[in-house]
Length: 114
Image 1 (cartoon, rainbow, N blue to C red):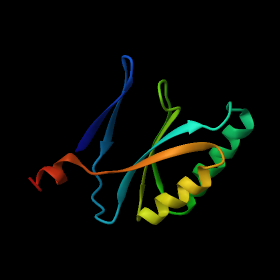
Image 2 (image 1 turned 45 degrees about the horizontal axis):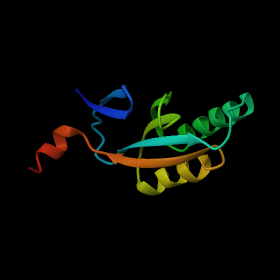
Image 3 (image 1 turned 180 degrees about the horizontal axis):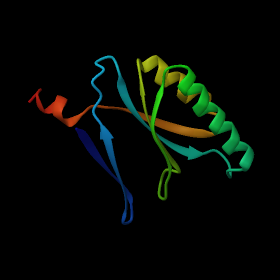
Image 4 (image 1 turned 90 degrees about the horizontal axis):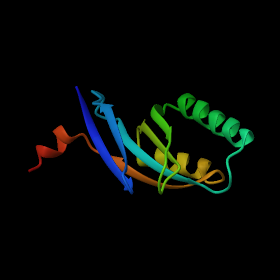
């Protein structure tokens, strides 16, 4: 089972994301939108790859990482045990990108609140 998000990013540019629903109740899903602080280089890419590897070592599951067209340059989708873990990722990435991070909820769970 999965759920989907559609992000309008501007003039005829949209991102459609299909994510699995996790059975782990303690797992939170985050979507982080990023803007490069400067022109990307191969060194920055290597630094980002190391950061992604470190995330996995610290129990963060990478669900998707995309470069995008439009207002944001990157979209990072990940699951983490807590908001503090997500904040750590934002702090670690601050040298490379300015981020806006959202906590995402599966549609099936939120419609039960109606």
